Amino acid sequence: MGWFGTAASDVEDPVRHVVSVRGAETGKIVGGGFLLGPATVLTCAHVVNAALDRPMLEPRSPGLGEVAVEIRDDAGGARRFHASVAHWIAPRTRDGGPVPAGADE
Image 1 (tube, rainbow, N blue to C red):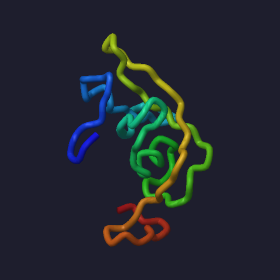
Image 2: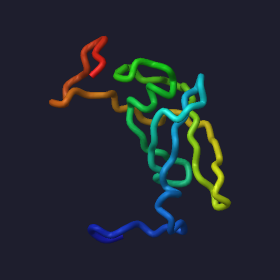
Image 3: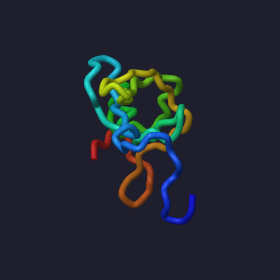
């Protein structure tokens, strides 16, 4: 992969790299993410918080809480997997500082 190039991939359709993140309680889509590798999804902290029914800007790590992610398959359907957080970066304020307790924006 060179500068400003794209990584080699067996999957030509970029939609196949987008995942849906579903809420643990409702099963409804609460956000999205990107498939970075065979077992790695990148999403935002607020999406993980929403999936686990936590306050959107909760800064504490969700620990071993499992999040349901859905990936489109070759047949046009979707496959659901359970994922856990491997690395947590807490939500931040616009200036990069920590979010005050109880903040909702």
